[in-house]
Image (tube, rainbow, N blue to C red):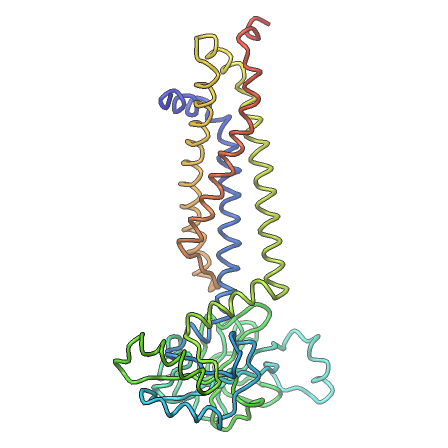
Length: 381
């Protein structure tokens, strides 16, 4: 039956090509949507993923980057009782407006309507070469340049929008700063991030968290023990980076408006794709009714005929997935070239492939009921 299915699919490829096209396009759209959305969601925890801290210390009960109301330096200093601790670094984020030119007093109130203003999250960075925050993303030489209070690092995307180059000036909350560098990946959903040095800056309240660096050789088991025992003893939340990042991303996905919109749109797109695939598969089976009736006239029973149609659906699924994966690789290369944030873990890609294949096979099963019309007597009409 496999050879017969292969021969019929190839011979009637014009009939089955629309099915493969619909499945491929639907899968590619889901891949693109998930890759971009996952990249944006991942960036919600970028300070964690791009830093080298062994633990993040916050007030008791804090589980995500957005839940901390601040932890004063006095309370954080109690962490020095941990013998392995060698570095304690504040994580403080504020908000402001970034402009390519100074603002007049009356313009500041109206700057929301000005296309030359970007609302940004301001991250205060330690300028020490061995600093933990953003150590995986920011070159040490660039970090050192932030020791000058009048400097700033902005995203490449923001630099392009504002028309600012390295060495030029921008105004953060109407205060002039010199751009010492640009970095990709600082553009988030609705708000970008800018990096300024802690020296000479006024933080908006106490740090949200404190990054903890341990002595080299400290085992993962010991770090987990410190997080559990010392956190309870000091009445602080000592969070491992993976747990903090995952909790932050989950909060962004399930509790933010952007996450709800994404989940709704992804679900709606999947349902529409399933309906279209089902209709196209039904039309293909109905269009081949006379061929199926001829096969029944040659003695092929209904069960074997149904198996033939299922194999045909499987062959179309394999071809569609192969083309879809090839196009997905090209799409990801394009996103990388355009500096668009994206992330497509293999498990997520495999889930999309499985969903697409299951939709096609389910549509094939639904279309089997039309095989009842494949009556050999219809060939005499």
